[in-house]
Image 1 (cartoon, one colour):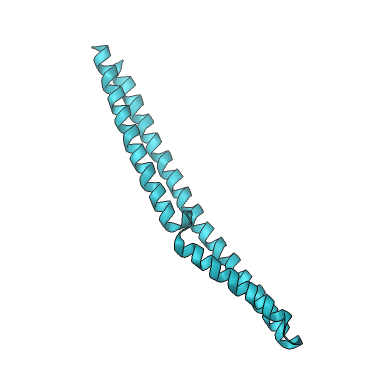
Image 2 (cartoon, one colour):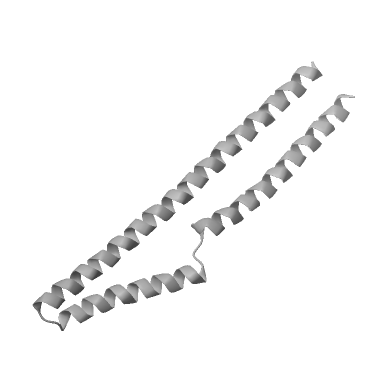
Length: 123
């Protein structure tokens, strides 16, 4: 009888583990879609941004004083925009990861409660 209960508990835990692994893979895919992975579009955008910054600084070398400072300021402005974009993107990813960790903690607490109930019902 006890062996049967133990097998049932193991089955329940295995089902919970399988569900957790499925959930983990689903979360990994979602994080990838919101910016956790570098995509082809992201690489092209980065290449365009680098070319724009480099070209503004190269053009500034060959221009007169007024246009030179304008091009340097434009390059610094582009770099500033890129930094702001990365901060925003990272904030989204961090927020989502925090939400995932909170969700995992909540589910883990549920599993612990169920396990405690099973242990109490055994006694």
